[in-house]
Every structure is written in structure tokens, then in C-alpha cells.
Length: 203
Image (tube, rainbow, N blue to C red):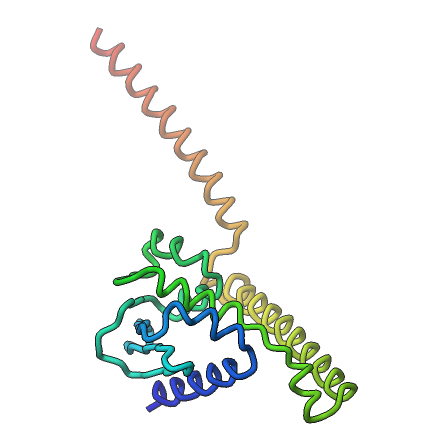
């Protein structure tokens, strides 16, 4: 099952992060043995995280009891990389939470603050020079991927608005508002004229 494979991949990645970033243990200690369950609405499934005995466990699908449960779509969940956004998402009804809010905040902050000195770890296998060169190349590839993604999103948006006409262009919104104001003004003038004529006829 795909979600089981994703959970296994996440668990392996987080366990590796725990090895490479000792500060992550300190960040997760306040929620040791506490279960955070996340409902991913898009996938109609639940995934649970538990830090126990200095190890991270990720279970999916999960149908047990949790100390804190979050429910949101995948796009909203990606915004949890910023722990301060948690309460904002709840207030805007984009995310539902049951249980201890502090557990979700601790997990979110811990994952967001993962800081691994990759150059140091690569150097242990490759040497200082090759390790730094590899890291620089990876950073360039990451930056390029971000730029390509931004261009792709802009191109797709432009295609919908200008070519396929399935999404309104911002200029169309402006013109529509102007036309709507003009129509409303004309209707008010006609209504006032009718009232005047009706009053005169009554006299």
C-alpha cells in the first residue's frame, strides 16, 4: 500500500535525522511517548508520529488513540513547516485539532528546526574539498528546481487564464468591477427617476 511505503520512508528519514542532528532529540523530549495523529483528507487516511526511546516511529494507516489529532488537506499540512501558522490555520477553519495543542506545536517546531551539517558528514566519507563541492552542487540543483517550479506554476496559471480561458485574468476582475459599479449607478438613476415620476403623477 502506498501510504505504508510513505510512512516507512518518513520513519527512515526522521531516524537518520535523529542521528545526524542531536539537537532534534532535545526538541522532541517534551513529547516523548506522545502520539500525534494526522488525518490527510486528500488521501482519506491517518498517519501517526511517536518519539519513544530516542527513536521515531511513523505508523500508517493508523486507527488508534492519539494525544493530539490534526485533520487537514495535504496543501494545508505543508504550511505546518512554520509552527506559528498552526493557530492561524485553526482559526481560518483550514485545520481541525483535537487534544493537546502543545504536542502539535512541539512536533512542528522540532521538524522545522532540523539542522544537519551535511558538509561535515559528507567530509567523513569524501574529504573536505569533495564534500563541499558536492554540497554546493546540491544547493545549486535545489535552487534551480525551485526556480523551475515557480516558472512552471506561472506558465500553467497563464495558460489557464489566457489560452484556455478556464480561469479569469486579474484584468477581467477589474473590468468586471468597473462595469458593475456603472450598472449599479445607472440602476440607481433609473430608480430615482421612476420615484420622481410616480410622485408627480400622484399629485
